[in-house]
Image (cartoon, rainbow, N blue to C red; front, top):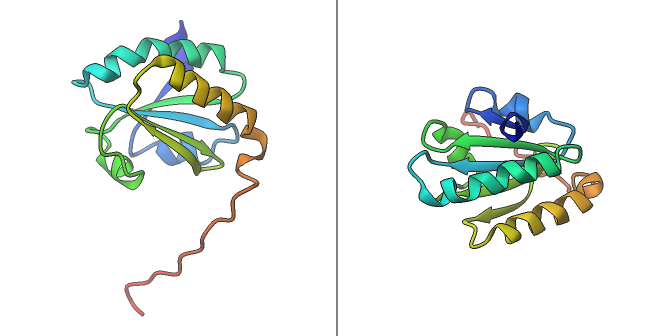
Length: 130
């Protein structure tokens, strides 16, 4: 079943499932009460089956995992976040048509092998004790 190809993430397992993943990750932030999420979900499942060899697909309930949703700036659902090596490459809030989501996934996969390598991460030296 396609649904088995989508991993359910939470605040507690996000780091392990997403940030430490070697494959590119497509994460869908959703709400159980969101009609738009329910409408796009079958397509997300289809794409997880179609592209499972190229990237990992993850779902996370934004209401049940508010820390992660806030961390990634999720203000509405569905929101799709594309990550490489734990680094956000792009985001897609709302989806007007499934073909837009598919096109974004295809473009993301095409650049997946180099996306994380082409980012210089910021180093924050923040301390409450300075």
